[in-house]
Amino acid sequence: MTATYIENVCRLTGIAPDEPIGIPSDQPARWMALGVAMAIQENGTDSLDYFAMLKGWSLAREGT
Image 1 (cartoon, rainbow, N blue to C red):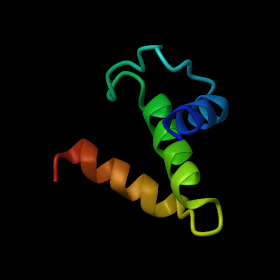
Image 2 (image 1 turned 180 degrees about the horizontal axis):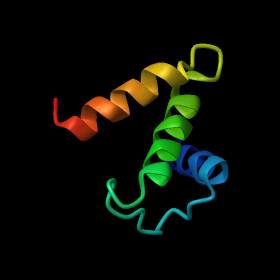
Image 3 (image 1 turned 135 degrees about the vertical axis):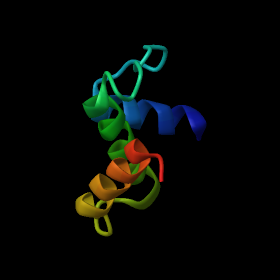
Image 4 (image 1 turned 90 degrees about the vertical axis):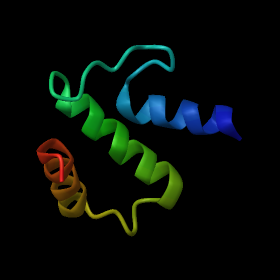
């Protein structure tokens, strides 16, 4: 099950399972893609709210 999760997230992001993803402030698009891919893997696409994810990313960057 874990292997399938990793395979799907890697397929969606194009990031290899053992590839460093960098520091969030230096590689924000990679981190956002990872978050979206994980949300899709866990919940599908029907309930995906990109605006909420972007807001969450902004709040995380602000440290609140």
